[in-house]
Length: 210
Image (cartoon, rainbow, N blue to C red; front, side, top):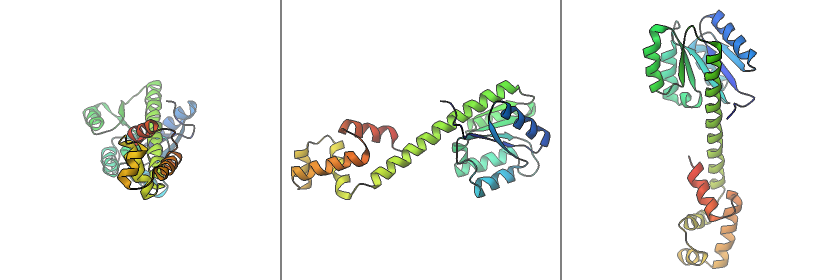
């Protein structure tokens, strides 16, 4: 899946030359970036400016003064940000074992310095594709919750029995209402859930439920 056109690559590195070089590399590949000189600055952006609320990934230096990249990553894991924002660590040779451990903790990947521009961009593209998939899945789950939330209590009861495979007649008997009333509620359920059949309804709830 190609990354969305509004994708952003966040760069967190205390070295201004590295930030500028990475921004230039990404710009040359038509990728938008935002740079931060410290982990604290990026964390502030996450909290105050909604950074990460779109298709994105993070290029994160391991060694920085103050809060280092590993500490930032752990905080992102605790808050769930690392799930939304794929993290690619930029590491020196001595940091490779640590970087491998962070991948096991949920980081997307790591690139060892000095890294190949082509290799790095390839990993960035892959991270953005993953981010796009996750955002699409999250959006689908939110939309599904909204559809379910729009159902009345009786419509929800009818839907549950439809999913059990009961016929309109059996649903009517179970709920002690008329078959005609079941038919009306069933039609409204299908309309609100934007499906045309019980099979489609079951598939929707199975495939897209959070």
